[in-house]
Every structure is written in C-alpha cells, then in structure tokens.
Length: 509
Image (cartoon, rainbow, N blue to C red):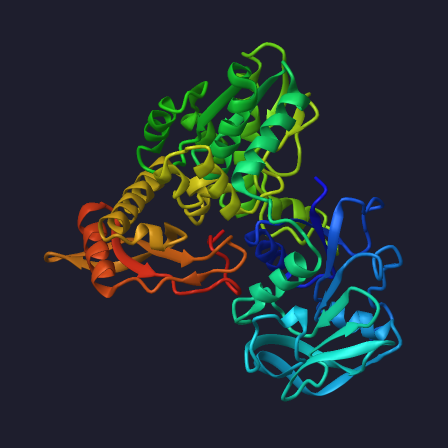
C-alpha cells in the first residue's frame, strides 16, 4: 500500500480520533509512537504530529528526530505538534496567560491560504493547551489567530510544513474535517482509496497468500468482530475455516441457539459447544472481578483447545482483534495500566501451538461494520450491541450462581426486547442490566419483600473509548421497571445508571 498517512502519537487522548477522521476521508492511516518512527517511510505520503498532555518546555519533552520527515513529506503539527515545530525550529513557546481550553473562534485567516480553503473566518475550533507559541519558528508565516491566541496556525515557508494550535479531529471544531481534507487530499495529494470494498479485496488476497491450504480455527462469539473476521476468512479459505461457538452459560437468554440459527444461512462451518456447567463450576465461590475474568479465560482456552484437537492439522487461530487493541499495546507509554483483562487478549498459552491471524487488526469498530455490510452480512447482526467476552459474569457483581444468571438473563431480555419494541435499540450503542450485590425492602400485595436490585445501563458512543448515558424516555423506563418487577421473581427494585465514561466505565466490573 503506497498511499498511507503516518500519525505520530505524542500521547494525546485525541490521537485515535485523528485516525478516525482521516479514515472517514477514505484514507488509510497508521498510528506509531513518536519514539518508534518506521524506518521505511516510502509508503507514506503525509505525516501528522498529534497533541500531548506534556509541555515542550519540559526537560523530558518528546523530541524525536524528524530529519527524514520535515521538509521531505507534507507535515501537519496539531497542538503539541505545532508547539514542537516552533520550539525546536527557532521559535519560542511560553506559558499562556490565559489557558485556552474548549471552544474558540478563528478571528483571522490569511487570504487565499490552501489549508483554510472553504473555511470561513469566525469558524469554531477546539483548543486544549496551557502553553502558547510566542514566536514562530524560522521562516514561519502566520495563517490564523483567535482572540487569545495570535499564532493559532502557521506554515513554514519553503516546506510543506503546517501547524495548528487547535484540534481539527474533535466534533467541536466545525470545519475540522474540511481542514484535514484540504491538507491531505488537496495539498498532499493522498488518494481517497481506503474503502470497504478495497479492504475486502486486499485482505482476502493477503489471507489466501498467507494461509494457503492450512486450516484455521476461530472462536465465534456471535458479535460483530468475530463474525466479520469469519466471513472474510471464509471467502479466502472456504472449508478450511473451522468455527467454534462456545456457550459459557453466561450469554443472554436463548442466545446460544439464536446465534447458531443466524449462522446457518451464512455458509460457515460452525460447531456449537455447550459448556455451561464447566464454566459455572470454574466460577464457583469467586467474587473478585479479575478472578472471574481469569477463570472464564482459562476455561475458555481449555474448552477451545479440546475442540481444536478434534480437528486434525490446525495451523492458525483466528481472532477478531481490532485496531484500538493494537494501538493500546504499542502506546507511547507502553501498555496502559490493566483495568480489566479479556480472555482473547494477550496471546496463547504455550501448549496451544498455533499461529495467530487477525484480519481486522487495522480496523476501527465502525469500519468493521462497514466491511461487514460490504460482505453482505445481515444488518441485524451488524447492528448488535457490543457484549463483553466474559458475558453476564461481569454484570453480576459478586459471586456467580445459576440462579443469579437466570435472574439477570430474564431482566436483560425484558430490557433489550423493550428497546427494540420502542424503536430505541439502534439509537443506543450498548445496553445491559447489572445484578447488584444488595437487597432492598419492598412491598408486594400485603407482604414485605427483601429481594434483589438491578441497574439498567444504556450508553451512546462511537467506539467505547468515551460514552454518555442515554436519556431514555421516562415512559419506557416506567414500563420496563414494571415488567421486570412483575415478571422476574427475586427482583423488587430497578435503578437506571446515569454515569458517563469517563469517569465511570461502561461495564460495572
């Protein structure tokens, strides 16, 4: 691929968002840490420097060698990137008297400047910095200002080097996408050829070449990622793909059978394995979230390994790993602090002598869905909400029992079915119910009860990195609460979670 954009990550919370905006322009891009610049830059047609939580004035400021990039490839510095180019290019960066964070307006834009083509003065941009560029670098030319930031954008004369102090990638920068299109398409000449159809053609060809006649085993989950990965592999290697769908006893109500039914019409070679009792036994007495995850992960590997041994001469294990997982594993600061582990992240135990194939490892979640649509996968399956690998085990706070699973499956079914009935399901990114480890007093008829409490959770998001709680209609919540309490024995109270991420996570464990 000779038409790529390189994004150098200096640790900004927005770096992945830059990549997403570039991909929305049908341009392929890759994120690399600033201290791990690819040796071969021949396939990149432009470079973007991300923002950073750090200051260029710090002694330990990130200071990569850009001698093979600056002046040789079109370069755009964003926020920290703009300050970096000034600070180390003969200009100066100083603490700002007014910390500009949030919305601002460009009060001046240089006439006939290609970077700001079709972007009017007064356009809203998003600022996030406590330093400011006091003096432009050598040969710097001011391109734009705000009321508080004189050097909001500049270029370096004689080079295709541009810099902006604001974030074009965030939604609040009204013409941010236009600016990125101006720089990448109209100025750097990057072709807009990154499409679902192109990805399918390229990936299927690469899989055929890599795998040949070898056999591949894939653990299906019923979710979008593993399904799209399966269909891609099926197109490449056909009957040499063996799919295993394991029922860990922690799926949604009736999900094991309904998912198997969905797969019947897709031509995939799928085997369903019901190991509910094995997983529940492994979870007995465990209440710590990480212990539960590890128990589920270990049991999954054991079950999967047993089934894989039933297939002779398997060479590869396929996984539905997507790009945010890859980025996280090679982040600026190394892998982040583990908030929670997952059963298919972190490689394989030594006894599973299989090579890994990950056909979706360079896609974001929304891109996976678009590729799935290109492959002709049913819209209902592609529109399924994300569901955690450990299933309901991390939505049951405390220890796991078959009775608790039954209660939560019933509650979850009422909630999800209700969202569909009220035409709310597709307006929510993820929804589910949580069984709390508390009981509350209630009154049913003439009797007092002392029964369980459930929390309902519904969020809107693009990729799960951030999420806002959904303002569901009061009438819907009222109906859902009544149905749960009246129909699910053992529950007498329903609450609704109105926490956003951050600071809360989407799941409770």
